[in-house]
Length: 160
Image 1 (cartoon, rainbow, N blue to C red):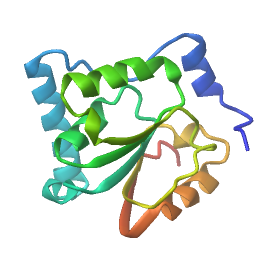
Image 2: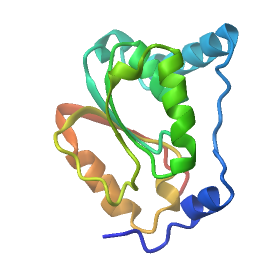
Image 3: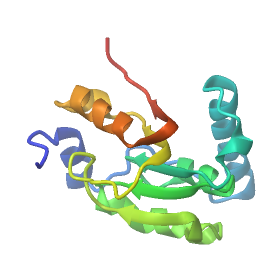
């Protein structure tokens, strides 16, 4: 069923805008991005980064993929789901520039409501948007259902 209230996504698409661009054009910018993301995973979420190698990870709302690039660089296999088609060329360019495009197993341009996984995942990521969704509780249950046995879900929930 299509999302009946895609207001935030509609806003981004109408304005052809990437809501969270992260510059990684220089080696220094990439190293800062990589260090910051590893810090989040390892020190704040207590996920040992050495355990991400060869893991199957799905990320919803990955925008142009700068966070997902770090996962790919750590050896993870990625399924990326991004409904804002305007950011896909930059996502593909980022992965190709870093020679990590082969770490993408699936790239889907559809909403979290519409995506139907073919398998389960070791890690499910949906950061920064669930609080904007009218059916967020149902979506959270769906995300949990995508986890393999022992899998984890990463979200941030900017709501009471």
